Length: 138
Image: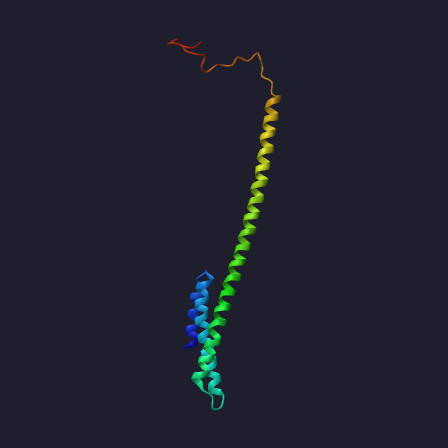
C-alpha cells in the first residue's frame, strides 16, 4: 500500500515543473515514507511505541521530502534553462553570421553593378514616356 501511494506521489511530482507544487507532493511522500519507516522501527524495537515512532518519522520525513523534491525540480529546471540558453546563444550566433553574410553579398552586388557600363547603342524602351493622349507608342 505504501509503495502504491509513493508511486502515485512520484507520478504527480514528475508531471509538474513548479518547485512549490512538487514540494507539496514531496512533503506528502516524505511524510508517508517517514511514517512507514518509523512504524517499522517502532515495531522492531522491544517495547517500542509504534504510533509515536510513526509520528516522529512523519515529522522528520515531511520536510525532508519537501526539500528534496524542491531541490530536484529546481535543479532540473535550471538544467533545462541552461540547455535552452545554449540553444538561444547558438541561434543568435547563426543569425549574426547570416546577417554578416547578407551584408557582404549586398556589398558585392552593389560593387558589381557599379562596374557594369550600359551600352549606348542599345535602345531602351521607356515604359512611360509621358502623357500620350490616346496616341499609340512607336
